[in-house]
Amino acid sequence: MAERVIAVFLTLWTMGMFMVVIGVVWFLHFTRGRKRLNTWADENGYQILSVQYRFFSRGPFLVSNRTQVVYRVRVRDGQGNIREGWVRFINSFYKTFDGKYEVRWEN
Image (cartoon, rainbow, N blue to C red):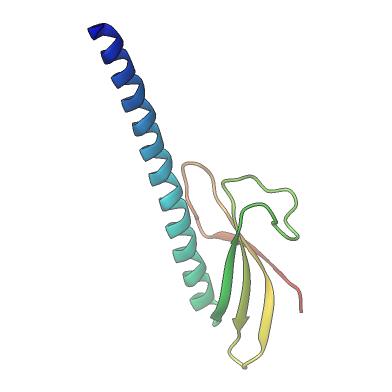
């Protein structure tokens, strides 16, 4: 009986720790991505008006892996023009957001 309780406890503990690790990885993925998006906007003179993280619908980036972060953005440029488009940050598992990005504007 004691072995069964220990086995159940260890199984639940392992599953819980796995969920914590996955949660931390997702949290870092989203916060780093948003920070990189803000840096991109500042470097290019844009004011972000709206932003949506895209997990399934990735717009023009049909071929992209899940480590690449895709945003749908609406920005105002330095001349006051409003632009809408898609921004994809290219990264790898080890190098998160190393400065490479791709932008596709709609207007």
